[in-house]
Amino acid sequence: MQDGFVKIAAATPDLRVADCVYNAAAIVAKATEAAARGAKLIVFPELCLTGYTCGDLFLQQTLLDGALDALRTVRDETAALGAVVVVGLPLRRHSKLYNVAAVLCGGGLLGLVPKHALPNYAEFYEQRHFTSGAGLEPTPIDLLGQTVLFGGAQVFTCADAPLFTFGVEICEDLWVPTPPSVELAQGGAHIIVNLSASDEIIGKAAYRRDLVRQQSGRLLCAYLYADAGFGESTQDLVFAGHDLIAENGALLAESRLFAHDILYADIDLQRLAHERQRMGTFTTAPAWEMPFRLPVGDCDLADRRFPRTPFVPADPALRDARCEEILTLQATGLATRLRHTRAKTAVIGLSGGLDSTLALIVTVHAFDLLGLAREGILAVTMPCFGTTARTKGNAEQLAEAYGVTLQTVDIKAAVDQHFADIGQDKADLSVTFENGQARMRTLVLMDLANKTGGMVIGTGDLSELALGWATYNGDHMSMYGVNASIPKTLVRYLVAYEAARTPDALAAVLRDVLDTPVSPELLPPKDGAISQKTEDLVGPYELHDFFLYYMLRFGYPPRKIYRIACLTFAGAYDAATIKRWLTTFLRRFFSQQFKRSCLPDGPKVGTITLSPRGDWRMPSDACAALWLAQADAL
Image (tube, rainbow, N blue to C red; front, top):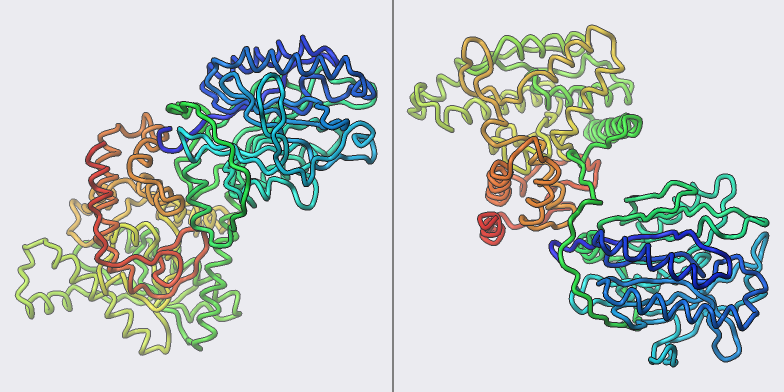
């Protein structure tokens, strides 16, 4: 099972009420199709061998015998599929009838799980026919020529792929206050399957979708929901076959209502295991572990998508709402700090670049939130050897448009003197040439803050912190870093969001900032244009943000990051380019931790931050050898 991925499927067959022979054939056909696509876990609806809407026919021995014969057929005819198949049927045990899920694999029965919660309200009357399986510990029974456990709290575990674990609940079990899936997940089940026959009424699909998605998030699991559809009796009810697959709070796949297809998803079991390991509040509980053998093999990932910009929602409406929320979080954090420190001014090094523009936007919002005059914002532009007319002009226009105080401090003479003091040849365009300018700018900002009774607002973003693309004790340092948990790809959308809701003159400047190449502007320009482009030096930020997200959020190893990046960025970057920049990312991420170990305060706005006081505590001398060795072997 490469990289922890496994393909699973929910299938809604076209069935006939009480026609067990027909239903078995339909189930086998769907299971065969799903297995051919690579599915290793295939789940069918509740009571699918008979139909859910059999009514008092469930009291007929003929139907019960027909269901067992159908189970034998499905067991035998799916034996060679190389997949686990889960089907529903009525089963009599000690003169009681149970609504049961049968788990099949390799020509045998792995287990029988009875339904716990039997609805007996509104259109439901299951207690007329069935007995609840709640509280039944697994006990051995003989069925179809073999001994199999019957009861709840069974966690089925693949001996060939230990992360491939699942538990079973049935329809209403999910809708009650304490679903069996809670115990199953705590017992080690990474996947919960639900065999359901949920009739369709207005508004129910949305509620069902939220229920499945939220349960997967609450239990840090994948949730596979297979729903009854066409063929069930429509005497009083209609069934829509609403199949759903969710993972850790995200909906991966959803069938069309009233369709009778097979729904697929590629589940990331390593990710789920990492989340449970990371979440100290996720507790464990004993369960009956039911081992089975199944060569899982590789997953083609044809049914899994990884967004190119994982920090940025793809839906425009959601993206705008997220931008508004983030700007509010940033501004509120800064406003709180300004009020607490009784700062009279906020001092920003305004370069006319992307990050300092966002910092200015946030600071303006913070001053507005506090009811302070914007003149108290001191925007300082500090031209030097690499400054272009374009960025300097944009800085001046931004300051004017926002109504903040602009101060220009030309630092060329100060840097010249500094270079003379330390014996630095200006013709030597080394790191000393670059960092001398960055540190001089920080000196100017800090002293202006002291002079005006203010605080320096940091402009560096999360991507730069990850790569260490900041001058130590230069732009690396501030008194409050408002962009500290904003990755570069998201910075662009935040500035674009601001541009979309501002007057035309300001919007035009913001759009020009967005069009300006990302650069520290520390090397002399060529023909008046920026000569030092960050992404030419350290790589594309969309790749680095992708690497950062999956490494920190889910603990992906380099091999897995490389694999999904090659799929996601196919056509944009070739494999060699992705490997090159992944290696760069890993090397810089480890070697530059010392800069992150002494970061200034800044607000956390997303799930990932590199604050040494919060989400990322890493020793500055940690070795990257294991990660780089895996990257080198790609």
